[in-house]
Length: 466
Ligand code: AMP
Ligand code: ZN
Image 1 (cartoon, helix red, strand yellow):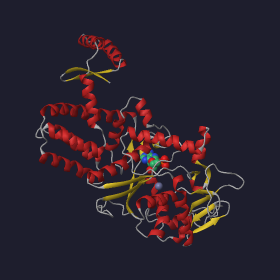
Image 2: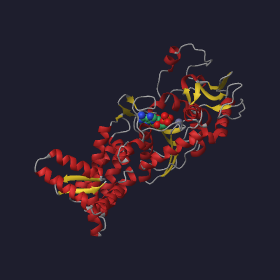
Image 3: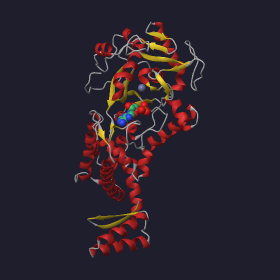
Image 4: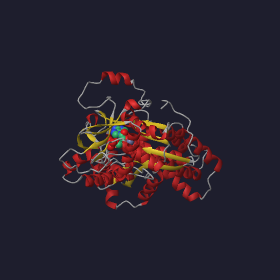
């Protein structure tokens, strides 16, 4: 709201109420959506690392998002998804919600305390529209629905800082029947004579909730009338979040939410990664291409949420190499710490912990935290046991599963290499020595195809099961 980072003060000491705009489950979520979800997860982890009890709500939109949102027309996205999948809107919601949860698990995104679905809170949404109606903030457009009259709310548009007079003056005189171009749908009427797949009775007749009312109704129900932080993509500033404020503040008073956090997008070759724009990847695609989902999470954390982040398989390759390097270095420490049986050096431990946490506490500077992690790995004055303990903290804060991957690497390194693989690797070594690089590459490909990786390190050739 103030367009700058502010010092955080909780409504209730030691507690965080966090609401985040989650997926619309009418098709698969792509890795752009996952930038959002990882960002929300980092907010929650940062507060937990500071001792907060976090009540995180991530909503699931399973009704009311229309294909032509600006004109309140077109199919409901869920019903469109059902038509394309040859199934029901309810099945569509479940299928893509399950896929979303599987992706969040792969990315080690902690489960929010609540993942409410809009269809589970229809009564609350109707109740809120009734309250807005009672104070005179609504009107009806026959055949279309109940609308919010934005001229009634003096604070309308304060989040975006847009010049509303320009929007109002510049709007084409259309036939929507709206009183102001910024007015928006609270409750849509089912078309006469046709039954929508998803519709409910209401004081205004059968229909469905408009898209933004769910976020006001569900956040208040699950977090109370006022809460600390509301987050979402920056495209929500002008309309969705502006409308959420307009629906909520006339009922509960201002400020409804204390801090707004908006992230920039993950960008593909052709601009914002989105379902309707160019090349998109899902987490499952990255896994099928052989990437560790943690390499993608690492790539996200190398960026800052306030800046757009370019995605390409080349940038992911670079991130994967960086991630694996840390895992490899940490695996060595893990082995050493395991044999030393030493207690960590408390003072050193706390110094490093505070330094890493300070970077993330300062407006979520995860990339800076990762630079400090690299310094920690190199630091000769910090013993391995202390480093080992610190990685427990780093994993809790950043969710990068360094411990898990290092443990797996140790197990793979300890596994004996089958004789036939060793023979191929030896033949490759001989071919290289004889400068027959074509033959060496061929033999390496055979080793890789058998599920093993060869790396030429300073300490010799290593063969590890992939
Ligand atoms: P949707 O399913 O499209 O409603 O989006 C779910 C969440 O993902 C919202 O918080 C969006 O702001 C966010 N989102 C969608 N596309 C991107 C992207 N390319 N980069 C970052 N966040 C995105
Ligand atoms: Zn929302």
